[in-house]
Length: 543
Image (cartoon, rainbow, N blue to C red; front, top):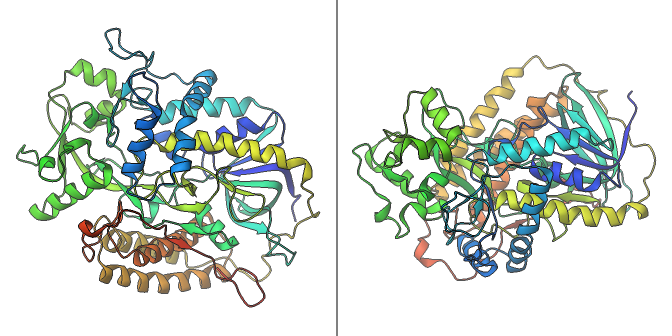
């Protein structure tokens, strides 16, 4: 039996979205932040490119809106796109005030912005503000230093949320979130966190795939928990594969930023022959789905393990100044990018779908919010445009903070919540089941639900995930939980949602490309793929 933790706001996740929200609320609320790993260990830390915002007078809000809508292939919510883009400048201003050290403009720059701006795929202007090639690290470490100093922010590192506690689950009328069961990973005991508002900011689900740019923590926890609690999940078929991850046996999940292509890097075959002109007139600056499919096509056509990204026409000084992190990593592996091309492959990178939210970040369940990659806000549509993700994190953190702040006084908690029940479980003597099932999911998702899909492969994947999910559910019900088991359970839910969503979409659109439906037959206006949680006869969620 453990004392229950009580807070005004429980934030599950410690990336740009979660920490921004914590800082926005902390002067008026008691805030708890959960982090599965060390506080800064998440996808934000590894984001290289930057944050998109209109910061140059030659650019415009209309242009940023239109570029985003075009990349989203008919599925973006125009109101949400404008909502986010119009708040970009203010979001950048806030980050600068906090102390994020963005790269300043060159003295001979023709831009009127004080900051150096990159151009990336899908953008018609230079509008990517960045901190060299480690923007995520600059943002995350700045936010981390601020939250560690605030007396109203309580940090719980090495804690993983297991499931949400809702009135529905407790047979109380309505469906409102009351808190969460949380596993203290180091002590291996489950705690109860009670909160007036709970925010899912736990990132995406890249680890559902064998090859990913995401860190190990990106196992779709927030999406899976929201689904089990009764939230609608949308557009999970749209998994963005970043075209250029470093291909090297000693490199794990290392991204080669799209900003290289913005600065003139060319994709070439082993022979040095460029190929993007055969796929899109925008060549290297085409949106990510186009570039990833082109690379995938060339690799399959030639039977090659990778293609190459060549920026050797730029001077060593330029490369060191603009891409110091990438340059150092490549040099450590014996690749001199100022003299030779970099071997690259596509990898699962970003989850465009997620928990459905409104403009305030609210989900279908009262007192439950979702922001950042966990959510489906309507910003990204069928394909996220480069560098709109960090922007979304900050904009929706600010929006959610306003809604949460206004709600706190009116929320009354029901008292002590039920403790976690371990009375009918034992310690596992079959941990190999967890590692085997984890590996099997990631492999068949890569093979059957990857960059190019077919109905037959998706049906095979669906059959496999049904069997595995049944096995995992049985295991979960009989043994004490561990971090690996919690993540595996969540990965299985997310994989099932991706497969079900992909089977529902009978067209090729954006990131969902199937050979059974030619892309030329795409309609002008698409429909979102929405999956609703199933309810049992007594009205309780049966997910």
